Length: 112
Length: 118
Image (cartoon, rainbow over all chains, first blue to last red; front, top):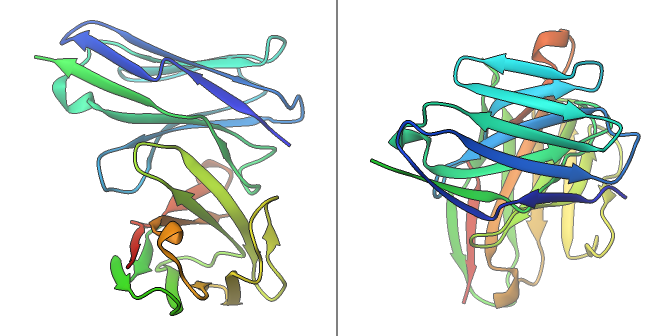
């Protein structure tokens, strides 16, 4: 089965700085990679996703890059704000309709 | 749109009893729903894939007789934790797939159910 690793497990940045979270996956058949933000006690919320036919996708301050050859993908948050503080999970799947395999999560703290 | 609800949001039960958790897609039909388990400060672990009208597919290590999943309609899947024990205490989250239009073809998560077994 798929194995997704995520680093770092915790990340602290000053407000306004950038944050980068990296994930690697093992199954070359995976072709859909969503990122979720989860606040304490709440449901995961999809913040951005990327499919394998695309190398990069951006949505305002958030971007995701994918390197299929190396089997890794990264989340980039620029101009971080305190409300970005949360746990972020990456996931990999064969498709949007198949089960997601999640990374271990990154607890991001943005220091005002 | 694409709202998924879960009921109850939290439940406390005695050891040995069974607990049923409902997952509903409120404004769309979901042929596939997924059940995850999350321990404090840990990741979401996929338990099973639930397909409407057929038996659920369980991940390795998940006891199908203990975690009964039923997906009787396109908007409802249920997870029953049978003979619950304290080690079953966890946060259970479902997700439902919104299929059809490519730009919306993804999974949406319910708010989760916190189960505490005394």
